Each structure stands twice: as C-alpha cells, then as structure tokens.
Image 1 (cartoon, helix red, strand yellow):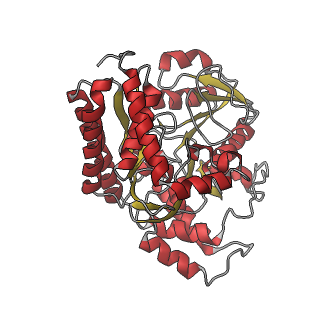
Image 2 (cartoon, helix red, strand yellow; image 1 turned 135 degrees about the vertical axis):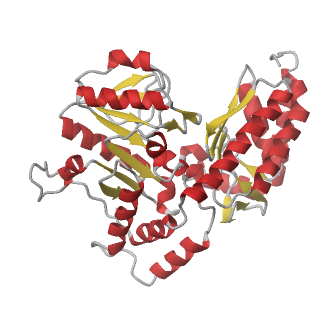
Image 3 (tube, helix red, strand yellow; image 1 turned 180 degrees about the vertical axis):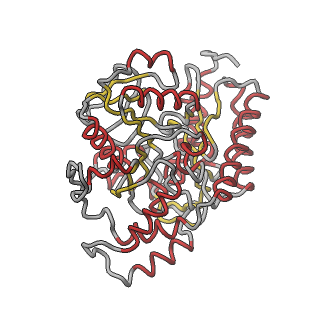
Length: 427
C-alpha cells in the first residue's frame, strides 16, 4: 500500500495508546530507569539498550523467557543480540559454572580449559590454525586489524558501509564518521557491490574486514560471489582478509566461511561462544599468528595481554556450551528463522503491505520499515509485540535461540498477523 499522509495521524495515535499502556503497566521499570539515569548517561552502559520512554528492566531469564521487574514474562526474541544462542540458564552451562566455583576465580596463570577451547575452535573453523582469546567481539576485531597491519606492514583497511565490528569499528553510510572509531586509515566501500570496490583495492590495502552477513546493518547477507571476489583480490594485492564471524559463526558449524567455502586469513569470534560470559577470539593462519610467539623464528614478538582473557568462568562456560553446538542443533534453529521470515513476508504480502519486510539468514531476522512513517511503524510494531508478551530488538532485530520451538514462532507470527489486520488500513 502507498503511504498516505492524510491517514498518518491514525498510526501516530495508535502508537500513543500503546506507549501509554506500556508506561502504565511498567512503573517499576520506569522508576529503575529514572534512578539509573542519575548515575549512568542515558541510564545504561550499552547504547543499543536505550529506549524511549524507558527500557524494560529485566530481573531474570529462564529458557526462552525473560521476566521484567514488574513481573511481566516475555518470549525473548532478542537473545542478547545473538549472544544468547543457548537461551537463558541452560542446565549444561549452569552445571559447569557451578562446578567452577570450587576451583578459584582469578588464578592468574594458564589453565587447561583454554587449550581445550582452542582445540574446539580450531577444529570448527577452517581458517583458524592458531587462536588467541580476549573479552569481546570489539577486542577481537581490534586485535585482528592490528595483527593484519603488522603482518603486511601497511596502513589502509578496507571496510564497508553499515558494517559493525564493535563500538570502536563501526560505519554508517559513506561520509558519515563515527567519532568513537579507532584512528586507522579506513577506506569505506559499498557492501556486496563488486564493481564499486574494484577501483579501491590495490597494494596499499593491508586488511579487508567484512561480516559475511551484516547483523547490526539490518541482517543483510553477502553473496558468496562477493566474498570470493574479496578473497581473490586480497591474495592478488597481498592484503589479509578478515571475516568478522562474531554473529555469523552461529549459522553453520564451520561458520559462513565453511558454508560458502570461502576461507579468510583471519577470523574473529565472540558473543555466544562464551556461553553467556564475556568472550572474544581472533585467529587464523599459523604464519600470521606466530607474530605473538616470542620463541618462533620470524616472530615480531607482538604483545597481547588481558587479565581476563582466560578467566575461569568464560573458559569453563565456553567448553561446556560447545557440547550444545552441532550441525543438527544449529540447523533446527536456522529452520525456525527461515520459517519466520517466509511466513512473515507472506503475511505482509497478502495484506498488500509494502512498508514491512523481513530479511536475514537462518536464525537471524531483520525487520525493515519503509516509507515516510517508518519510525512510527517501527515503534508501533515493537510495542504491539510487547503487549502480546513478545520482546524483540526495537530497531527491528530478532535472534532465535536453542530454547525456541515451533510454538514460539507460531506465537510471534500470530502477533504479526494481528498487527497487520489492525494497522494495514492506516498505511
């Protein structure tokens, strides 16, 4: 349906009703937000969680559900922005962490589980021959870039519009500068566009950093052909190709690099692999990673330290969580996401609604809102789902986890259908 500015106030009025209901039903979250705002800028330390008029304050999570401070229970389709692949309080991980309580918390030395975890990751991902741990995906990408530039002896890094590689390596459209970014010599290119990139790749490029599917950028998958072009181009000019698989490694047992048969020089990991604890990793070719080995011939003796890189809880949770990650378990969750996308698009298509679409890959779903009232539509959809006991990322983010079932997908699809029935005529 075409946008109608004459009917737009109807949608805005509907949104006002939903927001007022939300405020009335969540007084404890409102009070918690007001309190937090006295000591935390915007009341949080994670910008993606900012939400007007105030965010839900959560007090617990079990399986696929979260419970707010006001006692409302929601089916959680945020899954901690893909980090919560196992759902909440998975018994396998909880048991392992409970046992770790008896071993000591901060040992300050090498522990066996870091080698166990490294073996697991090197066996899963084709490109990783050696790996090092850190505490977040942001750190992993920071270290991978520094490693690549040290190895190549170059300064320029090819990155892509709408790419997100952490709080200090993120990009919007061409010409938009993130003041929080690291001071690398970034060359910004169009994602998934071979012809636009050809003139930008030469022997001044030291690293190419890309997500095989842009997650924060709207669940926008790359094509295999585009990634293969980058692989061939990096080889031709002597640059290192880095795949940021912090999110996309959950789509296939061998990551999207394994699914599509395109092997980078370095891979970064994070989020779900830590089993719910802070985690990041960067690894790749042995000849590149030996830069961190002071005993290796030809090593640059690069230093990479971090007090909690091998902390007992993350290493323990990650090794336990790895038992849950199989081709079958990932395939089941991916199939749920595929069904949601297909049926969600069918619902809006049958209604003639062109202002909403669903994209993504496997267990990741991006919701896109189009037209002049897109912001109002986005918020109306978000608060409508909350009213139905379903929480998603307000920007249009859905991530399924291992605790979701077909019944949960049916529940959210029914809510989508109700939303379309109620709002389509206002657009």
